[in-house]
Length: 213
Image (cartoon, rainbow, N blue to C red; front, side):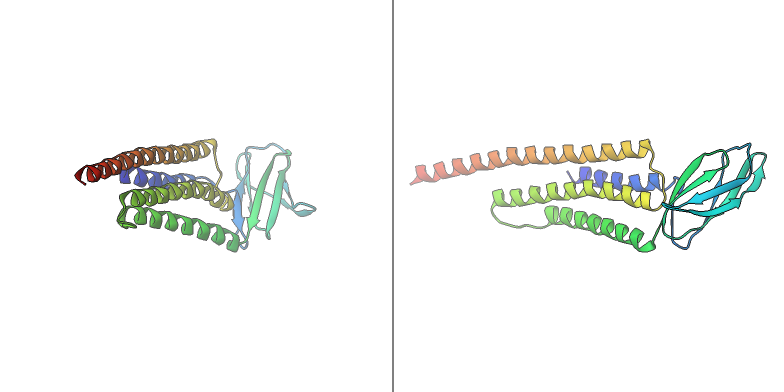
């Protein structure tokens, strides 16, 4: 069982690493980036709008043939960039505090998950075998459920950081979540079977004591 838990945790971490290789769609306040256009055959003007107004008009710099670039740097908010051929792109500028708070929550939950798994496998809660088994498996199920929440939070962090979330990444995270759900069902069924076995064993021991009397 320990191997399966380690595999689940590694898969969650891998999902963040995979997403980290994708281009940004968001920035933090105070940062800037260079935007490259697709090939265009119109004028070199671009416009940047926020949710209410036009905030910038400018000219792009020719990079090669019909590909242009320009610098993007704005205050916190949601922006739409429109090129001369009416193609557009959205960029969200967020504060660093928002990014750090999401990351802090995810790190806390991952630490809690690891701590719960440690408790489940290393700590003896009761000398009563049935009670010990019940507490241990309950903790494992709770920790695995929290692990599914971590995958969702990792997606949120990646989106906030400007990392594009492709269908492949969402599919990978869907597989992780279902692996966690199946693992929880497996642990619950195993717990029920063990509980029945222990209750049957205790019943036999009690009958044996009655015979001796």
